[in-house]
Length: 179
Length: 251
Image (cartoon, rainbow over the protein chains, first blue to last red):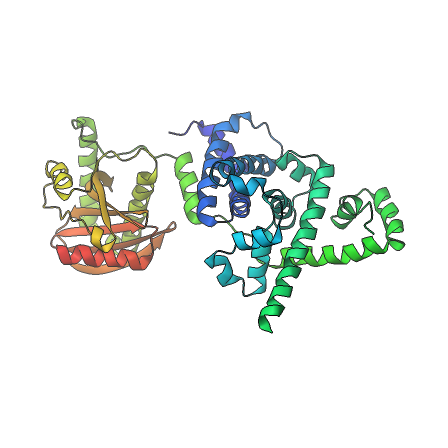
């Protein structure tokens, strides 16, 4: 069933499998849901198995995350094309992501942060997740997302500012509701 | 007024990505740029929140298992409905003999360790069954069709039932091999998750259900009417218990 030879399989387990959490986490934040993330992360990992012969050493995490990211975008293009074309808009995004699940958790700080992060366009969300949650360097982010380092910096800057204003927007709305 | 460095050097400085020389240069800039200084405080707040809040979502066990199962495929040991390969049958007979000898000679093996080991094998079989294209049995929701498929393969009256009304739809059945003995498997689906119920003949007295957890899967094992049942799934333990009750009351 698997196309990996024994030797490759051992290398795959040693180099790639330690990054399964990173793969799932990135997919979870790009797709905004655990069930979709599990399916897409699985597809990406199986794809990584098939392409493994093409991996000639280097940063295995960045290599895997690049595949995960591409698989996520292909999935989004097919299933939620609107999400990719939409630029950041507080109202639309905060409503779009306000599912019963997110509303239920939006009551606490963590919930508000999740909703705010999910309100960012995927291209901003991913640089934040890679930098702040995954601890990637600019060079790694550039390799994973196939964008120049200068663009990594400007994306991070805009992403952080938008997250800040989304959180401020929440604080404002929360204050209004409490009155 | 927004500073021209806010989108580039400021981020690099904040993230510790600038060279020593450029860091020193930017620090001189910071001393007289109110915008960058203020923005640095915001950056610190947003970044701090992201890092201190538990947002990281580790992979579920089920994902890891699926990849492991793909990397280490275990050749399906169960014969299909094709003519029986005699060589396999001889091996199975030998294994069965060994199992019987161990069973008789060392009763201490039949304690919890044994139970856990058995459950381990059954979970492995469940995992094998989750692989795409593994299903070499009968895929049908029709009780009659499934029963007939099993008729030629097992010597006891297998209780084939459909509990679709209670949320456990019969999906089919297949034969598997657990510890060298042929075992019937009924496949149910509950909330989109497969539940495998392994059933084999036994001479042991009836036992109440015992549950356990292994490799991310829940199992429930019990004996009734000279049959041993073991249901395995990653479904909720309460769901598995419900299926156990449904099966038990139908036997």
